[in-house]
Length: 415
Image 1 (cartoon, helix red, strand yellow):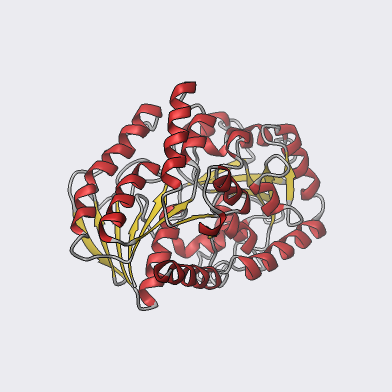
Image 2 (tube, helix red, strand yellow):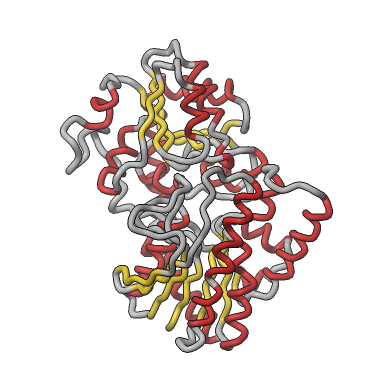
């Protein structure tokens, strides 16, 4: 089977959408399928094109057997509303010649990943021209999130954008999403249930495993993260590891840390990069219980997650059912307790219910209280962590999920 993956974010060495696109392409290639990828140069989360890549030139490379084309993409230094739109459109337009070049290759499936939704029309047209199957995979409901987070405004603009999105979604042969709540939303947007596929984010449960001593993971620095950051060995570490952006509601973490600054045994570690990092650092400048780390190398990721006694995952209320944070799988697989901010009934709350603690979004006092309560109950933390680990092993294992995807791809092609 020939599969064309059209995913703006393709950076297997990082977390998030780029990592999942990369692992999916690599896995399918190893299974004997022929996979090609059209993507932008990697830029996320620091919103700067990575060293060794070009923002202005077409590039072709082969990664683990997968042929990857990179299209020129403008990357704004400050990703505000108009800058984001220009950024997405620059990739959409520059990638069209690469799409047209696939007319000679004739893929069986054109697999496009949203965001950005702006790539969907060109992918759909290519599939129709070739008589190939079209597949839209939704990681985030980008249109809903843009209006919900205030990046776009105007009732007429919103009605037009949502109508265009619905029109496009209904024309794909398959539409997949990463949670049951997002799958239900696709049905609300008019996608027939027979064409919907649940394709959740996965985790490598062999690479991410519970560690007995958080700072002594195999192959890591003998000092460990706690010693490197000056955190006492007996302290309770609250970890957020991921992108620092506006969808995350990251400012809530600074407020919770401030409320707990007198709890000397509770330390916060914020690991990641993104447009909200500088404002978060400013908010924490006098908090001695807060520590910052840049993105860490892949080989230390398990040690990083294992350093935590508690993982925190804040999410803004207006984005809680439009996105499903990819970092949750790693948190659960690490065997540590998890606290999320989400309204009851949202995809995020359902994913954590029974495996962690859910507090109302935007309520720093409730978040601080949940952290403090769990900090005083090691047995409860251990129980939650073990339940989350068992769930990750049973439901989020990479090979299980990708085998299901392969079966669905084959059904789609032969239908």
